[in-house]
Image (cartoon, rainbow, N blue to C red):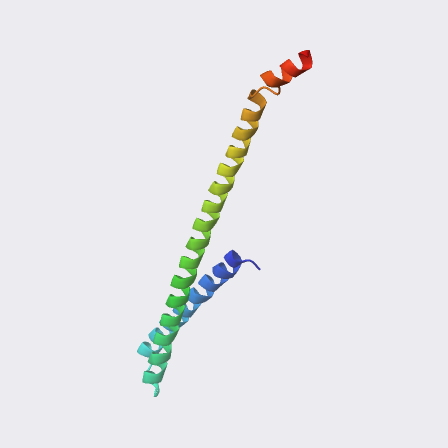
Length: 105
């Protein structure tokens, strides 16, 4: 599994943790439970952990995309330079004046 796939899955997992935290908090608010403080703390923890995971992996994915774009631009520039060098070689004469004078002697 490559880094982009892993990042995508972790973003989904982080979003699910946020969803679970919100749902747990809504359930605790709607019902009268004896350990509501503990459940609220757990809900806040789920939301915070999920939000941090989403933020971290979105940033990581954006950095990877930027690095991939830079690498592809660099590759394109190198290929363009190689083509320019080949064109210059084809345009330059193969023999020089010195070579022609040596063959005449």
